[in-house]
Length: 99
Length: 99
Length: 99
Length: 99
Image (tube, rainbow over all chains, first blue to last red; front, side):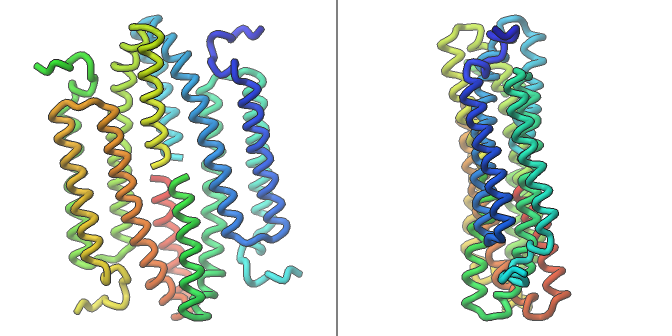
């Protein structure tokens, strides 16, 4: 059992996350094949948009677990703990919104 | 020589594009390792943002070549050709802006 | 004094938020002037990007206060309260990331 | 008749663009009212997402006209003219994708 279990919410869904990332890795390989086979640029861009969406929904899942576990836990531990976790989460959300 | 050469601008930079996609594939594998090693969610999200940025700059490169070659070529071929290519490009740009 | 005070974190910074929104309203009027004066499309698009960034940083500020107050409060109130607030926050974040 | 007419495609739809921007200005005022009336943060964020979408579709419309007129015109004028317009358009698209 992981020493973090209970801490990091996503561990309960580790397999699901790995499966999604494997699929995203497959999309990256699919894009290489498209470039090698000289596919039409617009079709490649469509695949990039699909891959970006998959990454986004992976990160939304992870963020949701983070809020549900780490942030809720910190909120219960005290104001300072909550402050640190929320600043961290906001920095991550801002990076995702901007990226 | 590709039958499309001259058509698809990105073919001149095929190697550069493949290299970038290989790096993006590596980032997808790096994310799997982070999930397996139970890294902290926020650190994983930082890597997702980096990977999304890499994908975005790949697609901006591809779009630029598409406009420079396919769209410019179509503009010179006639109004109807231009119309088709611009509609297609706008649909792709909208997907990228939304994704 | 508002009946919500203490609840909605952003109320402490209501004036700051109103000032930002006034500025954003001014940007919307500036864009109308640019269209009326037939400014160059690219210059208009630059202003749209600036206005979108201002809106984004307004929403990041609001979200931060929401997490710090409403979500932390809910986390302390109980698991069900936390669940409801986090689902709501995730739906809002997803809309912001997608928009 | 504007001296730019024929150049800037959006002038044909100037009224439509002004109407959209007026609506966006109204959304900015609506947000101020929500903050003044101390509405719930999540409801405000929903309105911000709607306003961001309206801005985005305004900019997609403008970009489409820009490509159809300025970029097509430049493509026909010569390679250097096309280069300048495409670099400019790509910088604008990148700002929109990032914002």
